[in-house]
Amino acid sequence: MHVQFFIKMSLKNQAIQTALSGDWQNAIVLNKNLIKEDPNDIDALNRLALAYLIVGKTKDAKSMYQKVIKLDPLNPIAQRSLNKLKDKKTIPAIPKSYKINNHFLEQPGKTKVIELINIAQPQIIERLRTGLLLELSVKRFKLFVLDNKQYIGVLPDDIGKRLIKFIKANGIYEAFVKSASPHKVAIFIREVKKSARFKDQPSFISTLDSALFSAKQRSLRSKEKYETEDLQDLEDASQEEE
Image 1 (tube, one colour):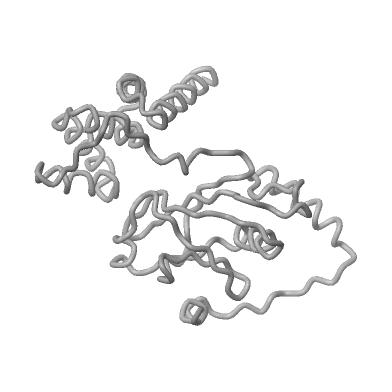
Image 2 (cartoon, helix red, strand yellow; image 1 turned 135 degrees about the vertical axis):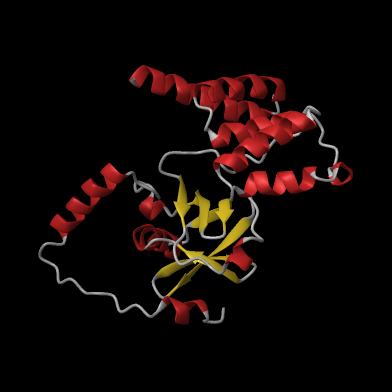
């Protein structure tokens, strides 16, 4: 089972790399292989649809997006693409040399996909698109996510507090929309710059590393007085002017 898992992960990584490099013929082959292994692999179906669209196989692209919608009716990528495919005249010509945005390349410790909490109303969320650059704003001990100063959501406290520490030390982070549906928003955050003071501390840690780190911190603070932060209501914070 472990061997099959690593083989699939290798195929997935190859499929992503072919898209990033604009090798769309190989992207079609690799994503087809992934779908043979798992017909419900939504990411592979979306990648295959995009590859078909770029090489001019519009019907095949539409078919793949329709399969995605059957599996995930609110999938924003498939929804937008199918809406565009309804009228072929509105579909711009896509050069075969087209390369997708590489913002979502993962780097352990430096990037993370995070699901936001307390997200904005559906009518605001539905305007988001994958790859959209977002703003990060520190307010009242929380890290808010904005789109052109419009509130989108907030990071979970454990991640937000960690990043706030780095940001206040002149750290720089970029955030992009990874996926968005009326009741769920996932963003991709990556470290751009971090203070030398924290160079040995990763921006993001795994669940296991987090547990070990927390245990160590509790030990170091065992003789210190714990002070509870006095946080204000999120609604008040979201209405605070910049």
